[in-house]
Length: 93
Image (cartoon, rainbow, N blue to C red; front, side):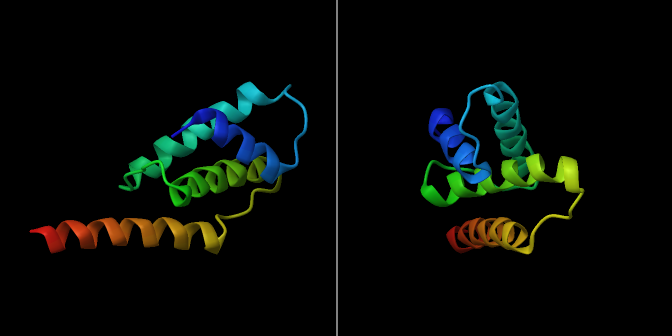
């Protein structure tokens, strides 16, 4: 995935116009990728995967203040991606 594009997408989601938090946001993006991979999801470079990473990172950014649980939309996206990948593996066997 293009890290520069992910950073732009995340900043647009969070409505951040400056560059002072870029290092922190890049760290969130990297952490989001690792946490998604830990759940068993294999990320590619398509728009769906880029959106999952940026949604996850945006949630991590917002929850540091609010403490909110993971949004259902994000959880559903991760589950759908994982189930789709598992079904493809089973179908190939």
